Length: 234
Image (cartoon, rainbow, N blue to C red; front, side, top):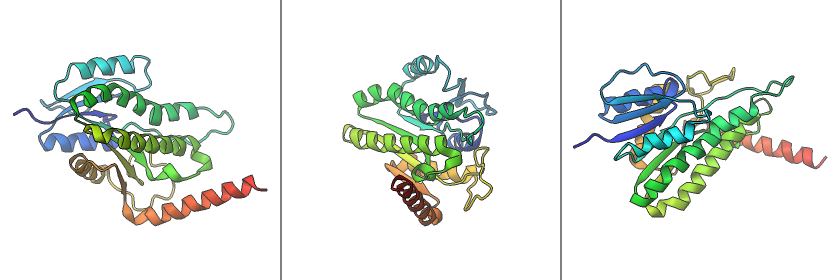
């Protein structure tokens, strides 16, 4: 019997790399796509170096998918988080395109075949920041809000046709994206990878971790809503 096959996009470091290693340990066949070369050498792993913002991303991904039988799982780990540079105001559109638009394009490539075969599972990594208003990270929070809404709305639409979509909302994970000076309940990439494997198995529409900071996120979200409403009504 052929090992289970998964496409992991954004896996040359961080959560994607840790999850790829765990999947290989569990016997999966992994196809990796990342803008950087992979440090993994394994007979069940194949890597394509490709940036999700490259003009040829969609066409190259379609060709890659078309050549793979039994590819019905995709983990999308791509993400960047830049603070606003007030003097020049640059990089915001790139952050949104990376975190949100590229995920939409990836799912567009996968869904037709999955809907036809009535089988498939797309897992996207969003953030607990998707409900927050953070002045210094507007593009990050906005792109994650869009991603969460898109994944969950689309997941509700396609689940009756045999396709599952899971939105994983992580808090701080010890990667290069963790910029904040305060990082409560920060997880290791390996801990995040263990959670992802459970999501692959159970296929929930949404999973938010760690649970211990969810009340804090709810309070911060409410404060942001009050601040915005107050500004509108001044």
